[in-house]
Amino acid sequence: MSFNLAESKPYAPVWNKYRPALLKLMVESANEPQEYKLYSHEFKAMNPKEKGFSFTLQVFQGKALNNIRKSPIAQDLLGILEQSKKASELMSVNSYEFTLDKQFVLRVIKKEGES
Image (cartoon, rainbow, N blue to C red; front, side):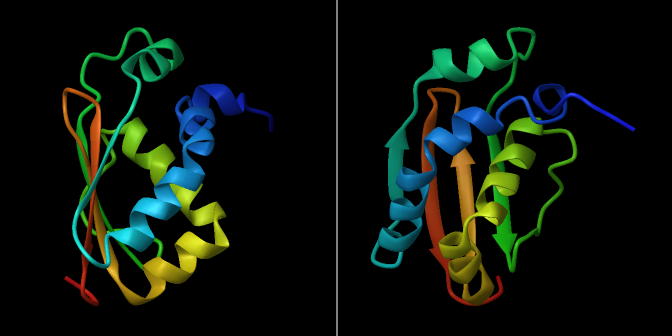
């Protein structure tokens, strides 16, 4: 059985590029919520047909706490975080909320333990 990785995870390459920034945001969110402006054209180039890119992803112990089935962009973010040893360590002790708004500002909020 073969499948095209790009089709199943269209946003993974972009999230992978931002992985160092994502980890930094997760670490620094221990003090206060963090924001990071992403480039909308990078995401739009991955899936030009997509209309809504905004999402909220609540994650704890490598699992989404909220339903992200209808958000491939959030699913791909979770997939990239799961591949990172550092992100997995952070998510094993605390829950995090990742929110991407319509202006492509990513917000990272660390919650204490399980929310």
